[in-house]
Length: 539
Image 1 (cartoon, rainbow, N blue to C red):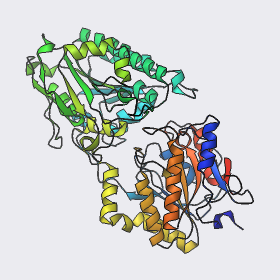
Image 2 (image 1 turned 90 degrees about the vertical axis):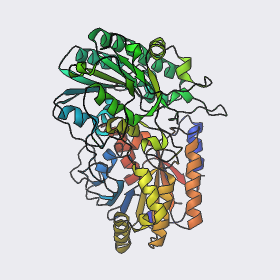
Image 3 (image 1 turned 90 degrees about the horizontal axis):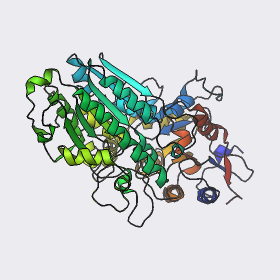
Image 4 (image 1 turned 120 degrees about the vertical axis):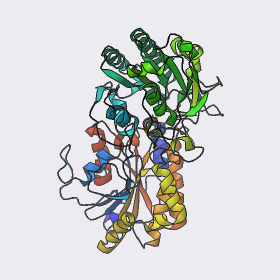
């Protein structure tokens, strides 16, 4: 019997996941676990003619795996010849992909900070480690790959050949500082936007000592950049995109490696002014207020699309100086603000430079989560929404909100991309595969979307539906992957359709820096069934 004929939710994969925990594995880098039948054959592998719905949102980490599964000319590693899949994605991951897109972009986000600055004939340069290159590029430019005339980018390679960034918590911040200093020394660069990645990247790792080193490395880097900005007479803005390690513990004491709902700091050090401390700023705002603030400092009028408000109330530095003003926006990625000191690793770390600037210069707290960044109320912030709103200068309704509304009003279940994939698979007698994150809180997606697809598949008369779950602990409690897997299996039993047949850590499947060895591991699990066998006779 063809293993793909086995279609009923049985033999939970949760025991195999918990066994992996016992062997020292964790959710993020969990080695593939593959369900097998009584004869030890993998169940539910991707076969020629099958339909796939990759239901993740966000997209930039989903491109590589999608490309491997859909591009007939793919050559990064060996793929199954002639594998033809009817492939749909929840949102557009990349325009070049030959896939159905259920919720395509609604149009280019016009007049972002980068576009307005460069459109005025001013040179702008962006600097980051490679880990955050997509954020200062694609997301800061309004989810666009376009590089505007006058826009420069300096990408410093993040540490290579490191299995865990906790081994190198300083990362490549030295290279970022040197690049910023070089651009400060170039008077033709009117706007510099730089990202320091350490706090966010290391904050997702359960290693307190490494997190403290990351925070302190960023603070030291801030001190060097501030010294150079002051010497050159720049206007320095220090802010962040979302919080992380300022709320390191859940109320029960468990470690929280995810993002937070807390605001982020905003500090304005106007070194063009004789008395920068006298600049008056609003004490509250949101990330969308940063772009109009920068434009105002440059003497540029914000476009009508920018509904954010400048954070500057008054500035003793006359506007006549705006013609020569230079602005440096420094994004301390993941640096949140929280008064409570319990579990606050920002407060616990030594941060003399940040503390000095916060106490001396005008500052504010900016909302960086929930509705302020186009997400559902009460949800945590993330780097994608954060950089998008910093650059857009307005609230942008994110894909998750649009998809949730489509489920509520029923249009989700009439979506042509989903219907086309399901109808084609049913007509060919093929299987439907649902691939994506299994979490309620991930910025990559939610189980609510998976469950809606399961209901739709049942309504469309699908008989064989296989689920391939990606897990990863970001904002989740320890060993949450096994709990989510059980929730998926319970839902499959409840509606009488679907079988969860693959579980793999998101580290392997959701890469964005061409670590093709990782992507290959995910591909071979999905297509060839390579991984730890689980299921019949193995529970």
